[in-house]
Figure 1 (cartoon, one colour):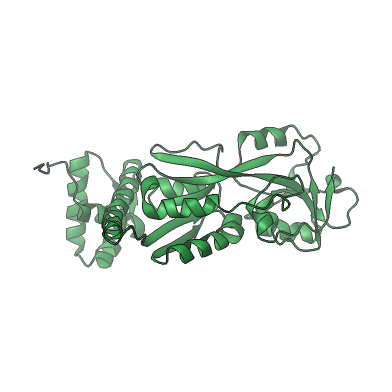
Figure 2 (figure 1 turned 30 degrees about the vertical axis):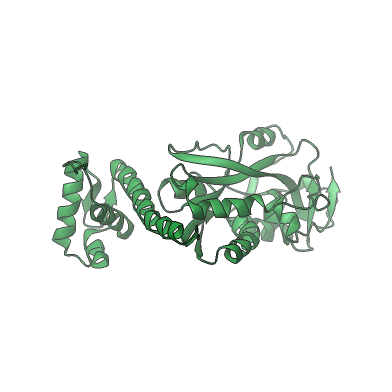
Length: 322
């Protein structure tokens, strides 16, 4: 039988690392774990000695992970999640492959609003034992995939082929191509003359190249935090925007959508998970529902590319073509 070595970290030591990082301090971690502060400090020092690196910067304001600590905590979260899955999947196997347990999902705003609700409804109907937990994350920088890499989510609905490469240990697969369109106040005769309302988001290289080649797009006069705020500014007549289809589901009648033509930009929406979790029953069950979220052939966006939002009641209030 294999024996542990001095370099092995026990699950309890991993939980201490995660809790210190989450609570930003040794005292707060001790309270959350029902331990003394000295016991937490001793555990962290033991982990640092075994790993051979300082994991936390200590100071009057608390404890903050070092770069080594961020990496260690991310792996600790993922290992602890696998230990949880070990028990859940073993129980499921003992009950004729019943699928049960929590499923942590990260999604960007428009996917959480318009793609996930019907998907999760079908998932719950087929697998009542699954407990979906959705975390909405801005799709900038590491974005939703970063939540998976950090061990905070089991699977992410993400934009793929973006400027941030996929972290080691993650796997991704595409679901659909989402077209962009020009959005402006309804009734405006020359939307390209309007100032730009923009917001930061991850997008693929094709979309960035397309954007760079458009000399008619002005510098942004408004930079919003999310696509909902962009729609609000556009609806009020403060400018035009170039937005992906999911963000336009249920757009108000005061907003018009203009197709950008056959060479319009698109972004690929897909899912990201870890190589270990990709085979878990809960993740596989969600992936099946995500892949089943297609649309009927006659329910398409203005550019005739099928996308899930069209099947869930997207309203293109005034569709024209440039």
